[in-house]
Amino acid sequence: MIRLICKAIFSLIGWQLVGVLPDLKKYIIIVAPHTSNWDFPLGVLARGIMDRKISYLGKKELFKPPVSWLFKALGGYPVDRQQSQSMVDRVVQIFQEKDSFILALAPEGTRSRVKSWRTGFYHMAVRAAIPIQPVGIDYATKQVEIMELFYPDGDIEKDLPFLQEKFLRFTGKN
Image 1 (cartoon, one colour):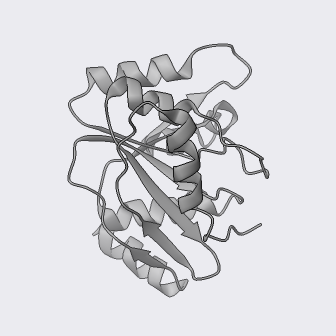
Image 2 (image 1 turned 90 degrees about the vertical axis):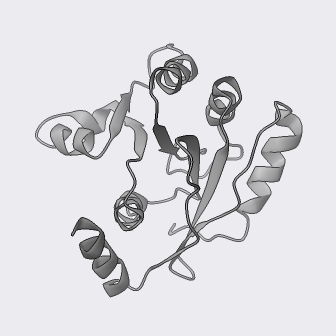
């Protein structure tokens, strides 16, 4: 029922989901460009259409009452960006402890324009020995596109530019 509702809303607002997620138990989804608060509801609708349990990292400020229950129910893990904790270590541990875990995050780490991506997602994938699933949000075509699955080999100097290039054709909202 949720899948049909999400599909109807997505279609009603003129958006389309292109591609399919891999049938794997563990991977990291990177979603870009992340330029607007609207990216989150679009992602929730797309996830509902795909009928997958996908978790995400969000700034801790989102997880305060009265809406904290909603963000947690949607699979959120709060991140305190002021603490010098190792989020990479925490996420790798989650991947190691769970039989099945899919995590979505924005490689920019913020909605603001950035010159370079944060690299935590890459280190998480390498250390947990899991692939990266690139997903682009394109406001120009109103499409959420699931691209080809990527297996990082640990050479971030080669892999990061390769991944970033995949997203150049997508237009963010802002």
